Image (cartoon, rainbow, N blue to C red; front, side, top):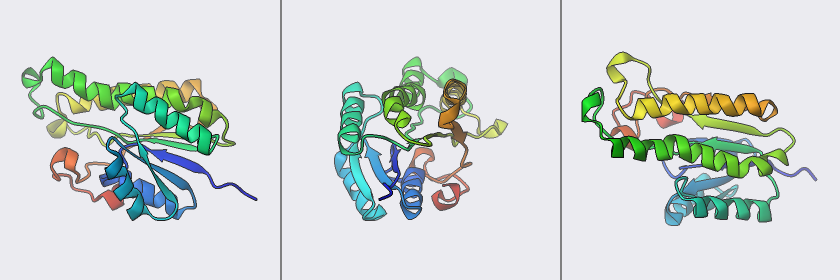
Length: 199
């Protein structure tokens, strides 16, 4: 009997993450719908369908990451796809002198360090899959008018981090995916693309 591939999508309770989770389930994967709050993950998993399971996962909390890893190991023994989708934005766009170090630190903690922490934790599980894939969602915009002082640098760092993983683990197929300027809560729904199209 062929075992269905297992995918984990961080921050999959809304926006692009939720749409990615739905698409993966449609393509026959069992999808772990990650969210900082379990009740949000449960509601999202219900909307994804029968092939989705809720998973409490805060990418900035090591205990949460460890618990998620333990559950995946115990229930599935491997992970085929990791989609690092979690991201936050703070600070005013385009005004570097207005960005505080606290804002910068909070955004980097989620958008960069969180990706590293989750990916490192899941590497052993990914190594058990026959053709593992790691994808980091990067909806940053290189256009000068939209380049922000906090969020955009964090996503630039994410690109570099993803490249480092791709070089080190070439067989895992690590890559960054840019869905474009997508309308979502993170940008107060000012984006020009729908989550459905972006995913």
